[in-house]
Image (tube, rainbow, N blue to C red; front, side, top):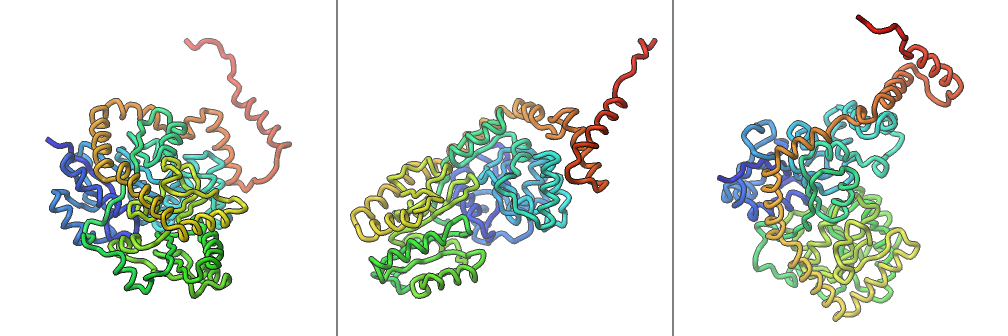
Amino acid sequence: MLPTVALFAPLSPQRTGLAEHIETLLPHIASHLQLTIVTSGEYRVARSTLAVCNRLGIACIPYSEFAPERFDLTVYQLGNDAQAHGYMYRALHEHPGIVLLHDLTLYHGILHDCLRRSAPGEFVGEMQYAYGFQGRLQAEAILQGHKDAASQFPLVERVLDDALALVGFNSFITEWVSQVSPGLPCTWIPLHTACPLHFPSRFDPSRFRASLGLEGVPLVATVGLYNPNNRIEIVLRAFRMLLQDCPDAVYLLVGQPPNRGQLVEEIASLGLEERVRFTGWVSAIDFEQYIRIPDVAVQLRYPHAGGTSYNPIRLAAAGVPTIISRIPPMRDIPEDVMLAVEPGAPDEADQVYAALRRLITDRAHREAVGARGRAFVEANHTPEIAGQRLTAFIHQVLAERPALEAQRERRYCPRTLALGLQGRLVQEAGAAMVGMGLRGPASGWLASIAQEIVAVAEPTDVGEQG
């Protein structure tokens, strides 16, 4: 009899690449597990996705109908998006399981999940749990609009404490987790890529490109939900240099920018209005079509949140040579497969330009890089490989579950208690001081108060009690 597994995951039409990621994996794990997908229940699953699930014998239920006693194990497809994953943060705490961790920084997801539920106090509690009294003070400052602290407070600590085991999608994640949470079983599986389930088998990239009026022109693209970490301003500067060599080149931005108005202004300031195009948000099928038409793609990311960039792998699978940032989460990909530039370097834009220029002007080089990328993905990043490794890990966790639950109980304790009595006293005294409105330097009177506390707490010798 197959083990029963509840898989918490976003599905289409959720606007997240993790929906497509899990949907393309389902055919490769469904024959090894009796699966039920648990969604947030805040949206209707796309009919096409439901049809695939029905064909594979996979049930889909909202979280409100989840009954943990019906399942041998829960698995969480966890990312940093409040709308797609917010319910999972809370479910994991109540129902420990395997975490498929795509990002090491969950700060924004947890913050926005608390705010969208009008529960700012929960965010304060999470910050205090992970970082003690200092975390509480930072959370209060954040809620008052003083700062954004994602780089300082990844807020992944409780997830690691709650998990029975963890899957990362690059070696950087698993090494980081092993250092932060020793003893937590952890493995890594290369992030797979595959065509959307209903992608037409006879798609013609040349015809699609011609329909967009882009036939015969050098085409550079960046795809995905790009944000400031994708360093579009660097790519624009490099592209402007490229126009000196290839004045008819076009830069295509596929996806929805968070602040299109600001990006349009930047494009205008560089005089690139006629050479840059936007698509806005596109469906999964259209997105796959756009991925297959560029001559070159530029997919920078810095700073990073620990996760593997999904779209460079998809582009490489399509044979599109891709320029990326040289960051630890992408170190598992050889640099002759994807061309890497140094993020934050003074000449970063020049590095991108040099790579672009050679790829655009040297067809043999472009085709060789594209062929190496496709071969590497086919050898390492297929859903068949990912499915085999994930199901093997799930069976391993099930076999060791009693021991893993005992390990979790030993590992999982509120970090405030882990600090010991001294830490608890400092936190509780500090919280009381804040409640009384006492802030700022107070070294003089704090010392005298500390002496009085010691005197009060000093045990009195009263002899043995009979």
